[in-house]
Image (cartoon, rainbow, N blue to C red):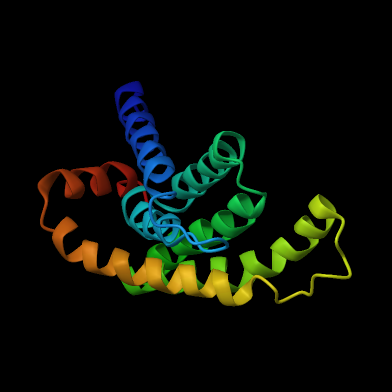
Length: 172
C-alpha cells in the first residue's frame, strides 16, 4: 500500500479521534458515554476493526488525562470498538453487526472488565460488585448505537463517507 493511502488513513483516524474527544463529553451522564458508542459504531463502519480500536484507545487515554475521567474511559470503549468493527466486518458489513458488537463489547465485556480495574484504582472492593457498571454501560451502548443507526441513514448517502469506507476496507 502506498504512503499516500497510509497518510490519508492517519488523517481520517486523527479526525475521528478529535470528533470522539470533543463529542463524548457533550452528551455524557456519569458512567454512561453514549456519544462514545456513537463514534465506535460509525468508526467501525468507516475504519474497520483495527483502526476503530486504535481510535477508542487513544480517545480513552485523552479523556482520562485531559478530562479526568477514570479508567472506565478505556474499559468501556475498547471492547465495544473492537467488537463493533468485527461485527460490522463479519455480518456482511451491516450496521446491525456493528451495533450488536458495540452493545456486547461495551455493555457486557467492558462493564465486567471495569470491576477489577476500578477495584484496583479506588481500592474499594467491599463497596463494588461485578455488575455495578453493567446497567449504565448497557444504557450508554444501546442509546449510542441507536443514535449511530439514525446517523447512518444520512451518512451512507454522502460521497466522501463512501470514499473513506473504500479507503479503509479495500483490502478486506
